[in-house]
Image (tube, rainbow, N blue to C red; front, side, top):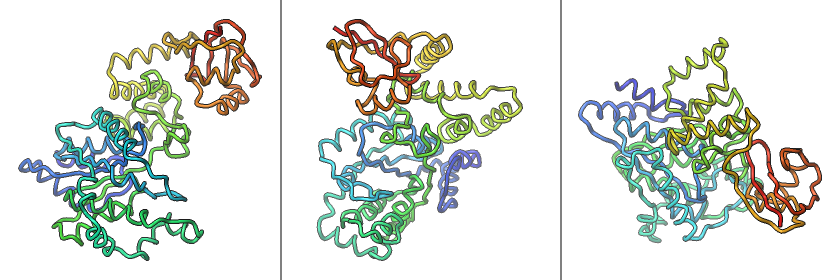
Length: 399
């Protein structure tokens, strides 16, 4: 049983530091029921989670299945600084109201995956606000500026004579100090967080916590383009609060190659089951589209339920196989003479008029299922079905 647990915990990981400690903790749980703590931090700098975030959440759930008690750390204090990891400039500071609103949304979403009874939600402002000036100065003496500049992102900015604020130097120290306060046994994060994760080990040693946390790093999930990391700003993401039909359709849009990566990092199917599917696809006895459909159904079921997953599949099949229109389109009323790009934005199927213009130029916009090329078009009175790409539809009444 311990070996199976360790295989599940190791699945898809990019790097593990101190696997021996993880083995001991899991073995002790199966020997005498002793639990252990697994920390993961999320700075609530955005409102919604996407599948990229769930890679860590899925791993936390795996630990929960094998004796781990999750310390879900909401970095409400550190979010006021902003993680400088991978950034080429100082990040804008968020106000407290925005941070707390985002934190509330995070908590509502994570329990689609995590077992709430095995999760402790903590806010690092609880102890960082109490640290005080003396405590903060003492913390800064535990690490040198020279060591801090070894970080690749800081080093590049320093050499390029770009601004680095003192508060950004504090960020990894504060994240590491969270592990001191929580006395975490294990911390998990993305590969881009390695410096900060190791800081937790360093500070637990400096502050004589009596343990050094093991570190488990997960790879960064590629977005729908299969190239860059999944990100809302790059519009290559699948949000876990999107409509079931959108989660389903977007999942089916990934490439056959990327599909296996998603299975490894996002699916709850066993590695043996995934390997069998892969063999069947290679032999030609299983079509990749069926494999993708199964993954899409699994994801929609996880974030909603099986019934809505089945309905999403039916809707997709109707629209894309039978060339039918979706049954639950958004409907809006607009004034006669409205510019087509403005109508697309008002209908909620384009984020901006500039994006609408780009999509028209790329032949991705249709009116009543006929492609349009005139980005200056104004709509006359009547009813129209507007469409962007294969998945976005809206009914517009022009009065």
